[in-house]
Image (cartoon, rainbow, N blue to C red; front, side):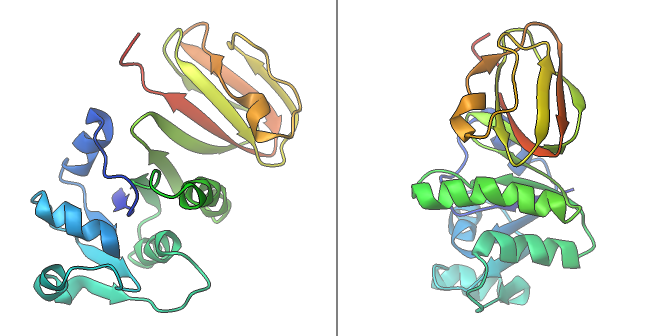
Length: 203
């Protein structure tokens, strides 16, 4: 597993922070490296166009700096591509939300693109874990845990174990703000969707 730290809001919730400092290798989008290094982190690679990297960080980690100047993809995808080229296919993305809403929405949507490429990927924010899934899936949860489902073209949607049974909706908002009734939820579907699992700190 490789951690990918993007240049959104730096994690403050204990769950992503623990993972960030767990000793797993960390690849930073270039701007994210500034804060990570300032917090004592040592990235295994820094990837991006290099325009937001502090000079002292650029100098110190010149041996692991990978400048990618093409503009057809964003820095998150450039970093994902670099991790895949390292031979890793399991990625946890942190720091990919906050700041600009266009970046937040784009980064969340990109999870499905990576998933469709066969990459085992998920995103941890300061509020939830986001997983891209395909077809019918059953997963462990906590009773009363808040769950949202965002449809990416799946058909025949249904559910077991949710307070409000889902249906074949199309709009993103229609699958939000649901709740687990027990310790297991099944999403029935043909196709792709995202599941957002809120952390259970307040339960």
